Amino acid sequence: MKSMNTPSLAPQPVTPQPAAAPPAAPLTARALLKQFQEQFPPFRDCLPLSIGIDKQILAVLPDLNRKLMRTALGMHTGSLRYLKAVEKAKLRYDLDGTPGAEVTQIHRDHASQVLQERFKKEAERKKAEREAAAAEEASRLHLEKLNQLTAKFSRKG
Image (cartoon, rainbow, N blue to C red):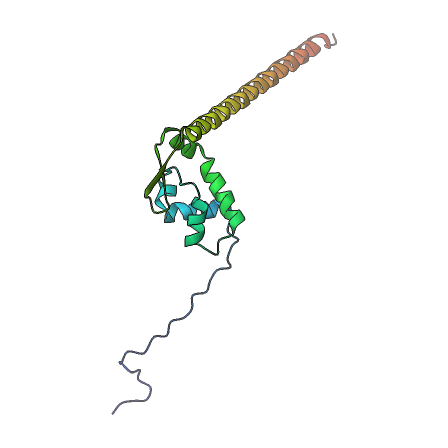
């Protein structure tokens, strides 16, 4: 005789429980760019993108915020790695990694110019930092000498 309190050994049907979704954080351009890098080979491999890649992205992700997408694209295409790739590249690539149109000499020259301007600006920034540090050190030494002289001549004796 089977007791009423004994659990049945027959498998019980499992009803899927909806996962508690964490509150959705607002998507940032950086997070979107990371998604692009995970989803699309040209972003991951930092290949020159086809002209009009935004239309290809919107065809795949139609609900995407256009302003956010453009910001993410700007971050990607403005990166040193991307500009260096364009500077040397011959072809552009579609979202799926298919080679497309040629990278024009005008675009390679523009990438080179942007890189040169960035490197120049970075060199100027570092020079200004070195000069500021040297001026600070000179000021500190000057103050130290003044304190030594003050101490020497202010002795009562």
